[in-house]
Image (cartoon, rainbow, N blue to C red):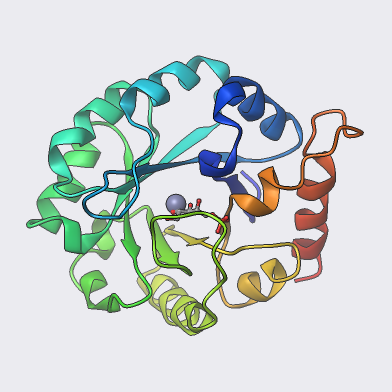
Length: 227
Ligand code: DX5
Ligand code: ZN
């Protein structure tokens, strides 16, 4: 894995051609598939579940990063593990027992992470660092693609970067929401190493690109190379 990892969110892909979209975006140079799960309860939208994860699993060996925006959380975790998820992240407010949920994800053989909404305090990290493989900072309120990046997320990234460095552990720091070519470098400078981008990637399809997304992924990487 490169130092900076690009994780297109398939939320903004063309669902009528999902397999093709995934194959293209990875061939264009993406590192990870970000898989947004919404339940119309924890967040006001409804998306995709384990059956879709299972359907796309044979297309690639790339990591499938499942972002659970559901409440409750635990019931669905084993299903996603069986469906081939590699990483499973959840929102601490959505679990009654955060440590148990992290343990369950690990027992199922997946990497585990916590997700922080713009208004969620970082104290949930205080007793969880030893079980975390990823910390995901939301730079929009979850539920929809195509929203504007909330600049306060940069301060939060800096704070989490310090905590990760102080822990000495290899925990990825992911950012999700409103990531674009024109702000990805600034976000990397604040400490993120994994970048979810939905509308910025899938909205930039080019028929002239061999894999439709080559130009936009190259542009994101070129910005990251400046950091
Ligand atoms: C929002 C999702 C995001 C979303 C990002 O709830 O978690 O992954 O798809 O979309 P963009 O990149 O369009 O902000
Ligand atoms: Zn997401």
